[in-house]
Amino acid sequence: MKSKNSSPTSDRKPRLRVGLKDVDRETFSTIVTERLGKQRVSIMLDSAIVEFFKAKAGERGYQTMINQALQQAMHAEQIETILRRVIRDELSHA
Image 1: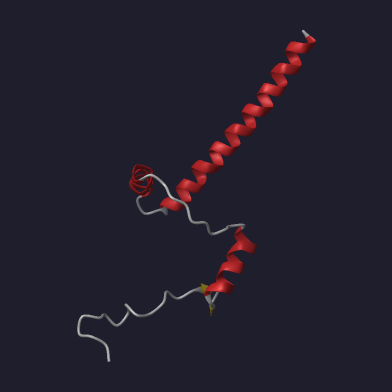
Image 2: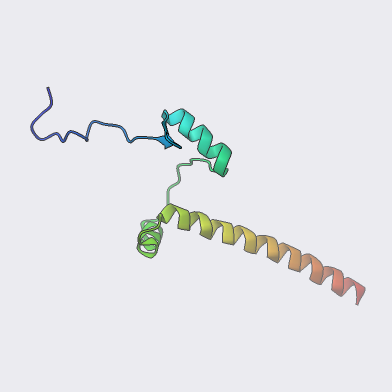
């Protein structure tokens, strides 16, 4: 018997759907990984970072924004590496 304080939905797991079909957590995870190239990770972040992205995200997902920031950092590093190589090559030919 449920307690009086328990809500009817508090004991239910979230519904995972792919298309119109209900799936279990393992199937959902596999499909997300295959279709979106996403991988679930556990990471500890400073509270200020999480608060910043949550405030900035508004209605959007803050985790998506953190992912985009990491992609930009990765891209910037790649550009820096390329620029350094080009400058080295140009200086060696000068």
